[in-house]
Image (tube, rainbow, N blue to C red; front, side, top):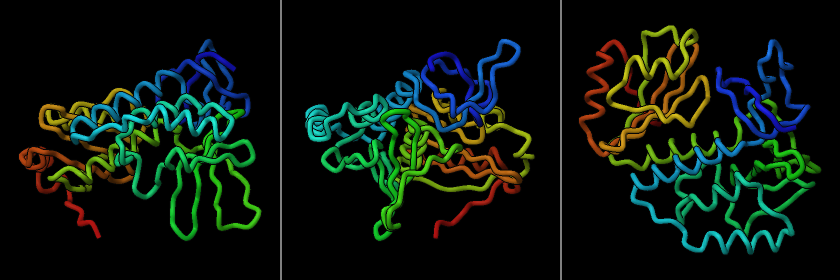
Length: 272
């Protein structure tokens, strides 16, 4: 189906694009678009936002693009006998040559590794001994999971999985933060987090240190950027506290963050 729709966990953001009847959470009422699950096919707006974010972060980190990406995609499509979904094609064209921003724990398959199983294109892989693949249905482009270590395993569709583009923005943010010279992970205290959206928490507390990236719509998470100081932050709101990861080329940014929060407003988390 094509039309306007709202997405579970996305607040009041309205998207326009393709969705499927089995994704509908609530039918349209009172002239409002229907509400669909968070796991949905990505519209052009979301794809463009994903590409824009990866390009901004790549520039911050000084990464070089893979100049042969388009040719590698065409070779993969010829081998598989399919056209890659728009979101997947856009991702491969946007990432750097070493796929640095697409996740170390959940790895983006190289074009020559892509495969199709039961009409689902495997795109990402998690784990070494027990491999879990994330794929996109080629008929109805939901994100789906399949564990290779289970005999006769089939793809499973998880309704509340993040959309593909949202997952890749989140992965790019977290991976980039870990590669920036000055970084830290903090637990923010003193807020009734379950009553606040991540975006509201950001706008109240952290400007002008960070500017919210306006293409990432998860209600309980947010991505922040400051291109002048080359700072990236990712915020996840919990029920009783919030976690924030910050990476910056300017060490004073983290000191300013601590000053804003005060000694009782945050706890510095030690990575194990």
